[in-house]
Structure formats: C-alpha cells, structure tokens
Image 1 (tube, rainbow, N blue to C red):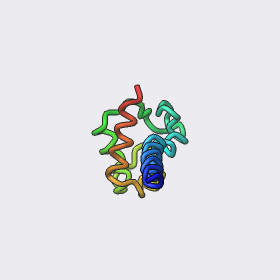
Image 2 (image 1 turned 120 degrees about the horizontal axis):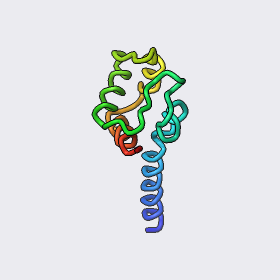
Image 3 (image 1 turned 135 degrees about the vertical axis):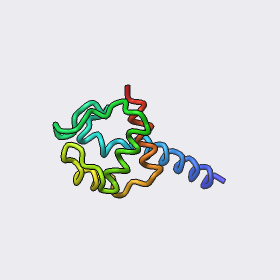
Image 4 (image 1 turned 90 degrees about the vertical axis):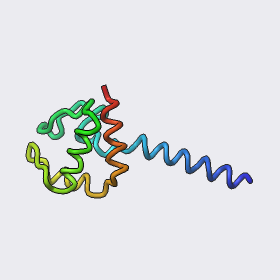
Length: 97
C-alpha cells in the first residue's frame, strides 16, 4: 500500500513540476516573466492571449512563421512541443501580467 501511495505522490509532484517548469526553456530568451524581447529582436510576449500564442507557436513549429527573423530559432524550440504543451505554454504566458 505504501508503494502505491508513494508512486501516486511522485507522479503528481512530477506532473506539477513539469507543468510549472515548461516555460523554463522559453525564459532563457524571453525572461522569467516573458518581459524581454528575445535576443533583442522579438516582441515582448508577456500577457499575450492564448489564441495568439498558440497560433504563433504552431506557425513556428510548422516553419511558416518567421517574425523578426526568428523562424529558424523558434522552429527548433517548438519542434518537440505537443499540442498540449503549446496550450499549456499559452495559458502560462496569458497569466503573466
């Protein structure tokens, strides 16, 4: 019984950590609160609505978006993101006010 409880707690904590940490890769360029222009080129994404973020990330992932010449960089960053990851990032960015 203890193993089941501990396993359940571990999975819950891991899922929470991964969800909370998913913006970490973005923060390197965009800032911890999305307050920076990435590499001094991009728009500040702090507070973007979810639909705008989802559309942008999907465009970069597909290779059809190249705003500020950042298409290649962002294509690499978004390549492994699932639709759920993109939706999660969009929620996090929208919440940054």
